[in-house]
Image 1 (cartoon, rainbow, N blue to C red):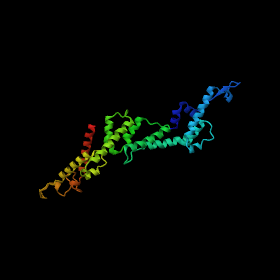
Image 2: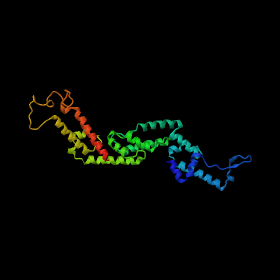
Image 3: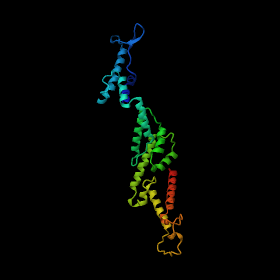
Image 4: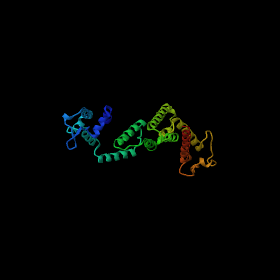
Length: 289
């Protein structure tokens, strides 16, 4: 921030801050460079001192009271700048330790439950900018790959797959990815608000974290209920003789898996087949993206 502020005034001023003031010297009788006295200043020398003073003014005037209290005994802009760097960033050893800690946070970064894409992106950008200030620059391609593979939650799986199949990850810009995810997030919220409450059955509420849209979940839930009814073998207005009924209507166990500790309506095989059917519908949707 300070660098941009000073460069915006005069680019050469930043060189004075980091490298030291412009020197005004002359040769003495022995041929050595020595500082000029005020009486020997030329017009060019005066311009140098003017720039030195301007660089110090822009640097000092940009400081708050706490920072200013640390630098009153220093005379050059370089001394002031070096002191401020140590105060805010620490010594080289402290900077390395802080960089290691921040990079560990970057490696373990994930999207928190209940947070939006923009909230996640703000945290992610803040972390990568801090790493950049410490000399650890992360490539755009690596940021995109990390968000797609290690940051987003499981409920985003279908969207991640669709992006990976339709986009070139090596050339996909980070802002383009975030825009794509934000649009999809808003679309899911809109569709959820538009779904009538009477259609939001118990099975749909259980699968609230699914990456399928509400209308797809409603249809699948209805199909699953029909599937269970077929398994129960109930028939309106029909009476069965227990001794002549097929095995699936008796209390001898489950005809689906052969186990005797549960009935057909509680068989876990139905849930497995239901999930398989959901996965097939998801794949069909991805192929259409």
